[in-house]
Length: 169
Length: 290
Image (cartoon, rainbow over all chains, first blue to last red; front, top):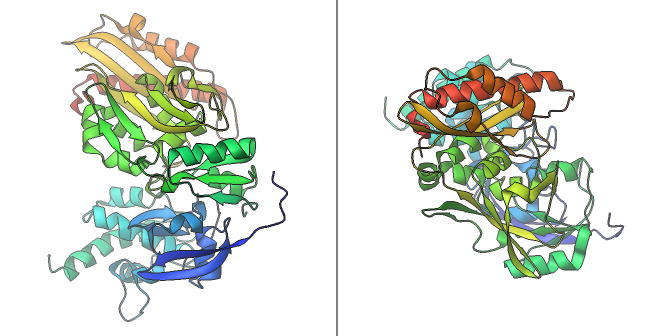
């Protein structure tokens, strides 16, 4: 192990929710902590910090990824979307967020940002999932409150809402 | 749950990457997808002083399909391989297996080559590599060498790679036309590490099996090939000697007991998965035909 006391700060620039954001952080700064501590984007939640719980899931170039398993320095080459980028106006919720409200798909809400990003990316590729497919789609995210039934319902409702908003029944 | 401090290196070429690796020696570690490495760093199970982040190295992110092999570069993500229709058509086992690697959010970042270099016995792709006679292209300061997958793995998390070497690509061998393949695994939770898994390649002449080989996940210390041809050659599809297959698998695997499952259970599971996969692979399941 390196005993170097130095943990120098680097200027790290990441494009987050369409905006280039720069902050000084050490190389070992996880993307999850960079978003929360350095950029103040606390919508991304941190649970297990080893890739199991899914709470910190963000979109990297539109695809779901664990922010706790990526360093901010590596994220500089990518477009990162957090839950704030999915939707941050209570009066204008994203279909996935709206579906969570309608289906009562959250209780404490800690896991919700990871579910919203995961489901949002999933519906981009699979716009009309079955209930079984919806359950499989969220299998990488843990929720300790709901028992998942209402989250599965929210995936299906979100798919409906998306189709409605696109004007296709 | 935060990594210890390290020096971050961001080489732009393979030559730069191996030069840095040579300079820092055993205190260095290659960072590609990081989906196995970063948890280890977060939990401080390892604290290398230098990370050589190869994500910016040009030319490592392509999949090439030739008549003999499917070549996967070191920065091809599992998700990219999964989506690659040319690779799936040339060697269906790749897509069959890579879909079992963790969850989509892990496959977005994790690399197929990285899972070989990591050499976790619970990894799916090492089993595929040995079954297809894959060859790893390894570059170091002394040049490039080619290493067969059979011989690359020395033990759990241990390979023949030197500290200053980088796997730049793997060439999975294509199987003879008509070979049918299957992949099955069982885990406590969807996407979790498999308790046992099997990759299978079966050749048939009409309704008669002419050859069969299998490799395993989580039940052998290093992935190796079990040749089932002596057991299955000449058998008719629909009337396969499944008890003999079960015996052969049970004799071949060498699982360990841990908190998730006992060795006896894993041995039973490996045999059962092989039998089921064999039946589904040989009975009209055409999606696996190479």
